[in-house]
Image (cartoon, rainbow over all chains, first blue to last red; front, top):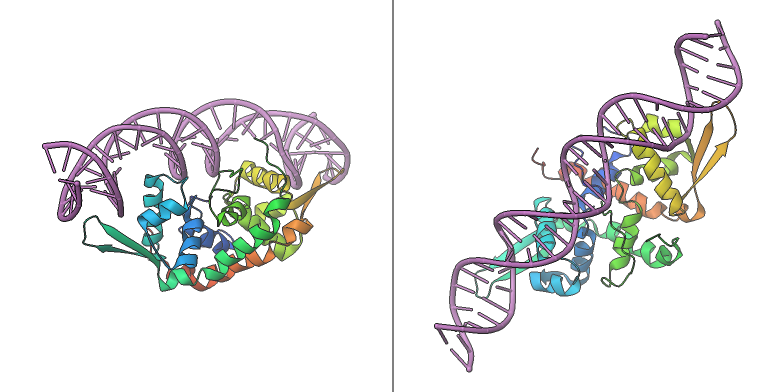
Length: 118
Length: 118
DNA sequence: GGGCATGGTATCATTCCTGACACTATAGGC
DNA sequence: GCCTATAGTGTCAGGAATGATACCATGCCC
């Protein structure tokens, strides 16, 4: 995934494609967004249950980056044990058609992909 | 981008999202596809003109991977100087709504993204 | 016979991403 | 006093992704 920050959008006429992709090019970001679209609000531990293969550190990282990009909000409740809720911002919600398109395609065509070599 | 091959699709219920993303998670793949949707058929040198920031090696790599995934076709004409044409396969063409969604979103919202720190 | 154009390869270095693992604070319950 | 749960953080290391640079073959044109 694209882990590069295009600071200018002049690289190419279609560059906004890349700009968009950078937002959730992180390894698990699209999945995080997808689950938020499904469930609305999720706690850290709920993400962990839904994505058992992601390490705690990665999950934190990806959530923080999404938050920094203004796509999700993070609300800490001053309780013990701590509770933190994540939810889409208004900007984040606008990504719905994009994530939806990704999932639609995957559901339809993922099986028809050529087998990758191990 | 996600540069990881999920070989199984069991990582999560929404995993096809990630599976789709892996196809064009490469740094320039979405841009390549975008240009192919715009122009239909493109030669290697035409890609280079449209994406001047991409090194020759990267461009070759990304094209080869898209080809290996069955999304684009590569036709070599036995001429001198050589001519090679790239074009979307039928499978590649099904990605149109996805790329389109990415570009739509980018055009609308890229400007509203928080400024990245350098 | 030198230079040009095309579509690449090969090699090397570096940077970045990701994972593994250990560790933390707090309050409640036993 | 010890254990539990939650939501993390810190450090380290390995590997993958990317970039820079140089190089190649062929036929045409001058």
